[in-house]
Image 1 (cartoon, one colour):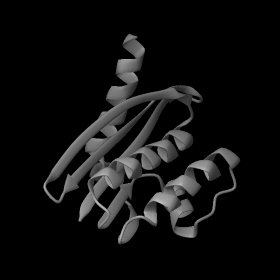
Image 2: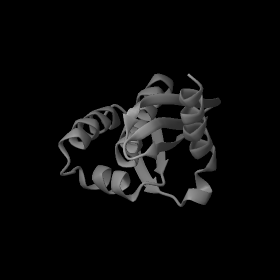
Image 3: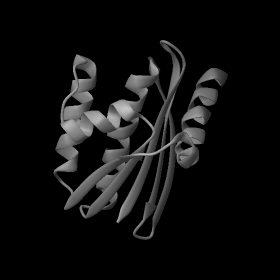
Length: 131
């Protein structure tokens, strides 16, 4: 089983933004910190899960347990619905990738349990700020 931790962060609304992805399990460990286009925090969270799913799909087609500290993202995936048109585009991609796994589930976790992904997302903003 792969454990996928994701987080998105924005310094503003919109503002400089980044995503953090931490994957562990099945002999893998990956840390990804990527600056993204300036956006708001909610959109950054959707982008983080979408990118994390892409990375997980490169490593397994088995069981993936995704964890996010965004209640909006977790709820959207669980209900397979979101009102925001931009977020719907990301959600559709997330759901499509999820179907490629033998088993996929997502769980909301508090910020305190998502420190690795959070640090990676914040690092992406710092990288962007230096450019």
